[in-house]
Length: 239
Image 1 (cartoon, helix red, strand yellow):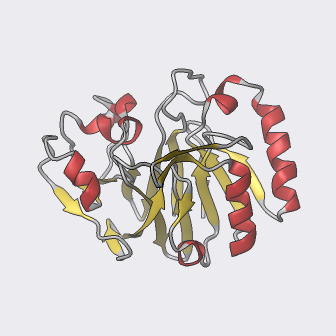
Image 2 (cartoon, helix red, strand yellow; image 1 turned 180 degrees about the vertical axis):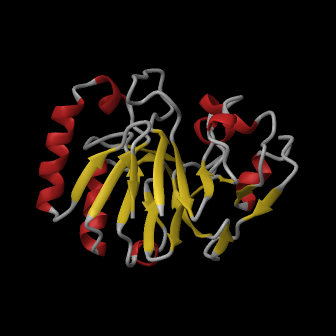
């Protein structure tokens, strides 16, 4: 399995050369290419990627609005995401049932509900191909059934909206927002995941001194027995 971080910027105004495009991950296996999420920055630019399929985590602008004019390939998403995108001119649309393994271009995706938004419910994906297992959740407060989601995972790829400060708000009885990276690294420690990559970068990462932030993150991660990296646009790795 090969991973290419096509974009690593969250829904913020700031952008840099390292974090220019809205967050998206390309998963490649045996010549097939599946793009996870397609935010507004990707509108009219999908020829650059040429994916065989697109998978969506949720319908927020920085994750799905690049499909406003349609898609050049099949698109897969959970039911609640399709309900929000029902007017999009996407011809080949397929349903991903939560907690059901779905094979797309030879790559297996299993959607786990995550807490993030009331209006745009989100999922994270347990992704596997060959002997490689990752978990990808660019927007979340917590993972429902976290133990099953992270069991045997080699790399956790998570939400970089905030490093240590709280970015969680309450709407009635529901919570919305983003878990700090520090909290996500604690999940990795508890579930035995030894590598983490942070994407969906917020203003703290994009506008501040990223080297200092990474050094701070590495110290937090080391206390938990986890290796951590901050992803950047174009970053590649092979499992």
